[in-house]
Structure formats: C-alpha cells, structure tokens
Image (cartoon, rainbow, N blue to C red):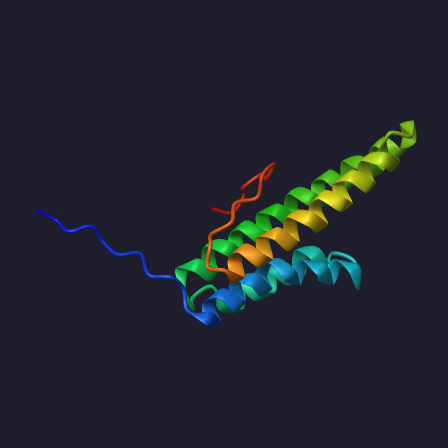
Amino acid sequence: MDEPTQYQEPNREVRQWAMFCHFSAFLGLVFPFGNLLGPLIVWQIKKDLDPFVDAQGKEALNFQITVALAVVVCFLLMLVVIGFPLLGLVSIGALVLTIIAGIKANEGQAYRYPFCWRLIK
C-alpha cells in the first residue's frame, strides 16, 4: 500500500519570488506594458527555482494578459461612453486581485485568479 505523499510548504525565498511575480505587475504604473513585462521577467528568471514559483509566475502573467485585453476593449468602448466606467472597474479589480494573489503567494498558498484566460500553461 502506498503512503500518501506529504505536501511540503515552499520555503521563504520561494514564497517571496512567487509574491514578486504577482507584485511586479505594478511596474505598469511606472511605464507602459510594465504590467506584462514585470511578471514575464521575474517568471523567466526564477521559474527553475521551484515549481511553486513557476506556477505562480504563469498565473500572474496570464492574469496580466487578460487585464491588458480587457483594457483594450474598454478603450474601444470609450467611443460609446461605457468604456470609461468599465476601465475603472477593470483597474480596481486588477489592483485588488493582484494584492490578494501576492499575499496568498507569500503565505505559500497557490492562488488562481478568477476571470482569467490562461494562455500560458
């Protein structure tokens, strides 16, 4: 009879890099497309450190791709005015979900964003 495998919680360094994968999206506040480049760069550099960092990096990047597509749709909808409030909702939602994801990753919990189109598997 096989014994169940024990789940090992990621160590402190791994949890911090997973958190940085999520929080690096705030580079979008500094320069254009920083919300995509931040998670991409951190994930590419640290994905081999641990499977937890790899999974959270993919999740962060997928979410930021989804947010970028939603922002483009909001800009297109600004022609019919509804895009202005939608852009505010998308921005607030992305901010809140990114903070939650970073905190969960730092606690060692794998976080899955809701409403996320997962292009990178």
